[in-house]
Image (cartoon, rainbow, N blue to C red):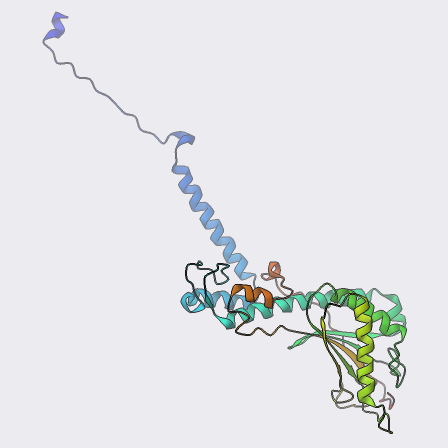
Length: 304
């Protein structure tokens, strides 16, 4: 004790610092960066898989988000579900609605063609059904072939077995949707009803009405059939051959939705205007489905 009495005792404290092993936080930063990069990668891949119309809609929002949506506390999403008012760019939303409905019609076209192709009875009857997604909507046509009496007897609105069977198969697919349906009747250019009491106008309308009754029995109800039209011979399928049996047909028409400015003023209005949205498939390419064409006729048949 005496030897140490005159010395100064110095106590040195060493603090050893380390990463803390798996209890540290440095790995969390690296992991967060990795997750962010992966999210950005998958977003890019998802956008690349979209069709051109949807890409343009997304590009329009990111190019001018202020013009695309001027929000008031409802978030930055162009399809915000907030209750505050928002001014959504109408053109982009119309493109999204049209793209979505076109996918619905393409899928329906494929389903109808597959169901008709598997029916042996229609093959034996030589019944022809043409399904096309046109610029104004989906058109399904029961087209006469041969002598022109596959679906209806000549000059009569009484249905034959081929027309009843085809309409039942088509109607079972249409019943799954909520789109409006328009029915059209067409005749060829042969003069009918010389006395003026019953002619092509009445005949085409009666045939369209007969198709309406069949569709309603298989589930196309609830006011979905909005119009029944009789065009007589004013809209021939083969304009250069007005007497062709192919001009005698029944058309089932599902028009594209008309999105008005008032309909898309709010996100709720947008949802109401898209009757059968396949939102989950927006990023998928359109399916490639076969088209049906009219076989060449040997010679014009001047019958109805």
